Image 1 (tube, rainbow, N blue to C red):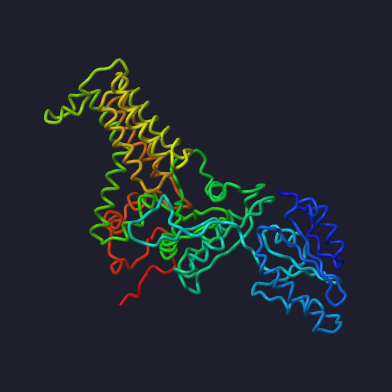
Image 2 (cartoon, rainbow, N blue to C red):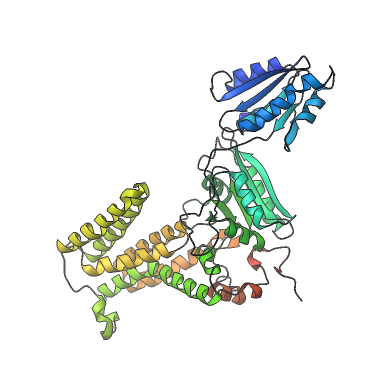
Length: 493
């Protein structure tokens, strides 16, 4: 357990000079240029402000200082200076604290703390103004029609964007701090009369049990502590940067985890099929949404089984009907087909990684070089046969069509594993490999939720809604998998 949890909480001293000495010795007042103190004399008593430059709104601080300075002109000497100061603070968010640990945490979080001589209590005023960008549409979740605002790195803005869409008095945001040194704000959001209480308690317990210096990698670190996923490549939670997607899941009974400094929120619990949904399906008519969903499912299947299946036909041409015998390679090379497939597939992964690290103005040029020069020259010199490039490209497009980036990478790992199984065992390798993948997925649970629901265990009604995008007036029942308190989205007449 962290040392700070072992030691007793130090009460705030009545001497402002003792508090200043503590801040100098323990927090770096005077050493760190951004940690400051503003000293005032109010009714002949010392009043000190502690703050962090860059995390506070200077205009609010100036207004508060002006209000306190005016006390000297409008009030007589009084023993109740603390109450007078508290009453004169022109801000809506003011609370009292009694320990030095709280004082330090609040200052380092961007709030200002006001201490008055002779009082063992301090006032905390929330004047945070975190640096960051304005809400904008996420790059990975674009829609043709729909809102263009998305989550940012500020947890306050993110909860506000969510509450703007759900103006329900039962919507709750519980905030806590994680990390002995980082002290990052983490909030769980849920609708009180909808979300499952056991799920809320489980997530709250897991977050409070996190013991680490800091969660600089934000939501991903929190996820790993909550789920203890290990080396399972399949994503057990869903990430989204869209406020409308998060709000829709809240109304279904899910619990959302917000982590400060991250523009993504964690949706729990989720299944395999949650990672195949996209907001675009719900911005179109049900028929168009269903069509788009089926195309996405087709892309998912192509990303997993297209290459292993084609490679099986290359190894065993007798399995192909005569009419489509042309799908095999029409040219021979000295490089085995399995090696070509791995080189091409890994090469595309090289390009994806390079695109992430390439500045935007140069990414187009890099794409042209990769597609035109590398691909064509590799065929001309005999390293690849054209069919390998074709089917690897189709599988890659299927990978990019998967809405969840994490799931697309997991599917690529499965695809490479199936290629190895086919290369060694041919037809039995493909059949047994796919069976093992399904068994592994069926055995996974995300926060006690079956990962392949509603396929395994099978739920006909829910599985129909996975295949067919129903219209909103017809979607009256929340998914049973989240075990909500209130099953009905709309009043049942």
